[in-house]
Amino acid sequence: MNQRPARTVPAALAGLATAAVLAACTADPIPPTVDRPLVQADEVHSISLGIEDITDPEQDWDAVRERLDAAHVNMVTLAAGRVEFVAFDWEAHPDAVAEEGTDHLARAIDEVAEGPDGELRRVDLLIDALIPAWIKEDPSVGGVGEDGSRSEYTPSASAIHDGPVGARFLELVEELARRYQPDQITFSELKFDDETFGEDDAALYREMTGEDDWPREADGSIHQDAPEIGEWRSQVLADFLDQASAVLDEVAADTGKRTNLGMDVLINWEDPVTGVPDAGLSYPVLAGSADRLVLWGYLGIGDHSPQELEQVLAELAGSDIPMEQLIVSVGLWDLSQPDDSISAGLMARGVRAASTNGVTAVNVTPFTLMTPEHWTALNEVWTTLPPTTPSVETSGSAGSG
Image 1 (cartoon, rainbow, N blue to C red):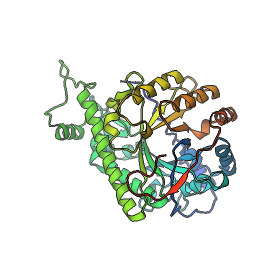
Image 2: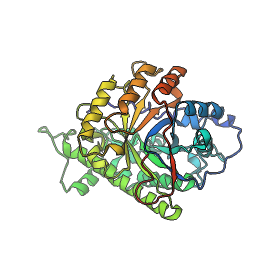
Image 3: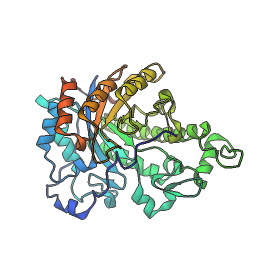
Image 4: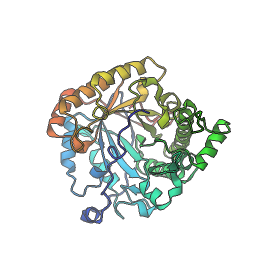
C-alpha cells in the first residue's frame, strides 16, 4: 500500500471547537450568500483556506485579500468543515455548528470571492469526510479491520454507500449548494484505509460483486491487496459520488446553477494512471463520477521532487483521463519537520511542475503555512491573473475552471 498523508495533516480541525475560541468571536451574523453567478475560468490559480482560517475570530480579511490579489488568485477553496463540525449555522444539525447564529462561511465568501477591479473568483467549498466524533458516539458507523479493530476516523464502506454517513454527506452537499451556490464542492479524505472488513461491509461486497467471500490467502486470511477489493472500494465511492452528483443536478433544476463535484485523490507515484485503488481511489473508476479529480501533489509527504510530479502528469497525459478534469494541489506540509512547511523554492518548483502536460488548474494549500517567502515565490510564478467569466449554465459542469 502506498504511503499516504497523515489524516490529521490536511484536515486540521483539532481544538477549533473549544469554548475559548468560539466565545471570542463577536462579529455580527452574516446572512447567507445567495444568487451569486457561477464563474468560469480556462486557467485556475487557487489557494486553500482551512477551517482554522474560516472560523478565526481575529482573521484579517483585508490582509488575506491583499495576499490573494498579489498572487493573482482566481479561485479560493474554503473549508466548510465536517458533518460533525461546520463553519455555518446549520439549522438541521445545530450540534455540528461551530458557533450558533454565525455564518463564518458566508463571511469568508463575501470577503474573498471577488478579486481586483471586481474580478470574480471561483469558489470551491471543501467537505472533510472524517467523522471521529460520530464514531466515538456511535462506533457502528466506523470501518472495521480484519482483526476487528474499529477505525477512529473513517466510516465503513456501507455507512457511506447506503448508510447514515453517506446520507448526512448528501444533506451537507445540498445545503452548501443551495445556500452558497458555489462553483465547486469537493470531498477531501473520502478514502479507505484497511478498515472495510466488518460484517456490514462484507455483505455489501457480496451484494455488489456477486462473490461469496473476500479473496483469501492460502492461510485463510483476507487477501487485502487483491485488486478485486480495490476495485470494489473505488466503486463504493463512485456510487456515492453519483448520488452527490444527482443531488447537485436537483439543486440546479431549482437554482439554474450546476455546481461542480470535486474529489481529492492520492497520487500513485509508481503507477500514476491506476490511482490508488486500495484506498478506493482508482482514477479510471472515479473519473466518470466526479467533475474534477484533485491530485494531492504533496512533495513533503514521501519526499517527492517536482520532477517526479511532472513525470506523474506526463504519464496521466498519455492515458484516457482528460487532463482538463484534473486540479493539481501542491501541499506545503513537510513530514520531516511537522511544524514547518516545505521551502518557498520547492513550492514554486512544484507549482511550475503542476502546470505542465495540459494541466490548467493548480491549487496551493494551506493558507496557514504560507510565509512571506512563500508568497513572494508564488508571485513570481503566477505573474498574471487568469480571467474569469460569469456564467449561469446549468447543463453539465459549472464551468471549465
